Amino acid sequence: MMYNKGLFADWLPKPAQLVLVLVFLLPILVVNGVYTGNIGYMSGSLGMPNSWLVFANYAGVVGMGVSMPVIFRYKLAFYTKYLMLRTFLVLALLSFIIGTTDSVGVIVICTFFIGFFKMFALIEVIMPVMMMISPKGDRAQFYGIFYPAAIIIPQVVGYLATRVGFFSFWENMHFYMAIIMLFCALLTVVFMHNLRYDKKVPLKGVDWWGLFLYTTIFIAIAYFVSFAKQLNYFRSENIVLAAVVIVVGIIFYAIHQRKVPMPFVDFRTLKNYNVIHGIMMLFMLGFFLAGSSLQSKITQGILGYSTVLDNSFNLWMIPGIALGSVFSLKWLTKNKSLKIYILTGFTAFLVYYVLMYFLVSPNLSYELLILPNILRGFGMAVLFIGVWLYALSNLSMDATLGVAAVLIITRTMLGPAIWSLAFNYIDSIWNLEVMTNFAGKLDASAFSQQGAMSLYKNLNLDALMISTKRIYGLLVLLGGAVLIYVSFLNLEGLGKRKLVLLRKRLKGQSVKGYKREVESENEEEVKTEATAASGTAV
Image (cartoon, rainbow, N blue to C red; front, side):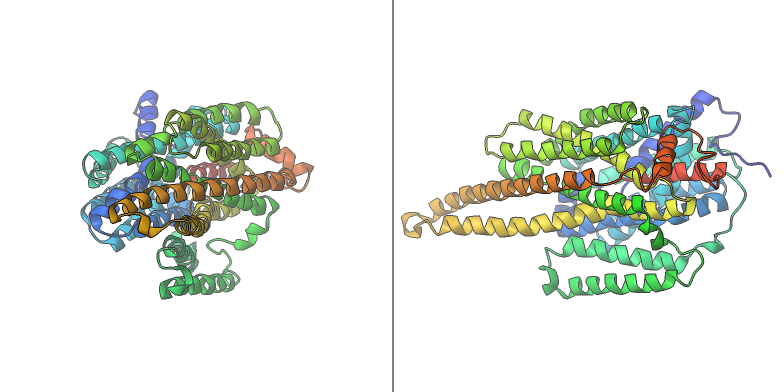
């Protein structure tokens, strides 16, 4: 039996292979069940609250996390062509279903499976892309270029999706993606080889019961954070039920993982020093990401910008992401302090919020928001690279897959969602407080009904500005606390050995002689692919 770790048939010229890798990569990175810029259009068209679509979006994140522990089992169980072809066909079918259904349950389920299956295609193209970016295997160079590119591409496509929804119908974006997926499937049939990646490994070792429990726990969390505010928190039976499912699910999973030799995700690996503080930093990154939605309250709620114009600010993050890429390449390849590197990313976000605190105004111009969004893009690029590499360093292959599953959900769902829920709760209290203070100083008999309604609009805008400014101030204080926390961390791990290993891996150098047990070449490839694929799952 012959094996081929590439993607394409040998008769295809190398330049054509490189082009096809990019043709596959771009749609894989951006395909989704819910394009966030279109949530408002979908909500209005389908007659459902935004919470359902937020829940569907988070379900897609859970799907990406759930796929990580089993992804290499599938990679080794099937031929590469078989796996890629069926993945593209499934993604095309799910995108088409979302574009034609009016059932919220169908959208949630399809979005979950889009997140699950897109990772199977992404993991296949990671290694060829790494060889294109860094032929010598310099991982710092690869991560410094690939991660920012993987952030930029969804930002651009997200803006285009918003334009499609604004100028035509939101369903068209899903039809376009279905057509693109079918085109990729056709290219797969014609150009990909029919050989295995490596020796066949059966699927019978997968912990399916653990997968079910893991999925149930995080879907319940996604429901909780999506609907808690709308359903008035614990006054709702559904929210109480979701909380019970979360607690009971965690207990059952803890018992279950003690009874199986290879649990779906071994939570005992989360005791690793790097993993503990990596998860904490990603969770704290969540409140920086969640706070970014406050900008839309200003641009749409106060300034009256359209969704298209509001989403155009995401494009101004691209210069910042590019700067973050250059900074990462210069910093990581020169063995400079990882702590300073990560602190720089958090500082960029903190400066963004300081600027936004002083910019809250009904007379704010578009141009004044450009620099803050460049800083936001820089901070995102640096932290997505730095925290991810730190958290997954010095782990075994199996541990890397399990921890990556937790990190994906923490960074993209848990952190932003929980902090957003907290900020919305605080904002509603402060907004009501401000409106009450205004109302207490007005004489209702002095205004006609028409005058009162006009005055109410102005008072509502004032209350919105005051409460938003207060939250920005709170974010600045929290950001300062994060900087203090990171400053006291030992980001190089528990000793000199881990520092040497981390630096050597970032530079793509051999770690032979620095470890008592040298990992096999295949395990190193698996860890590299898992780290890169999970880090770009945005």
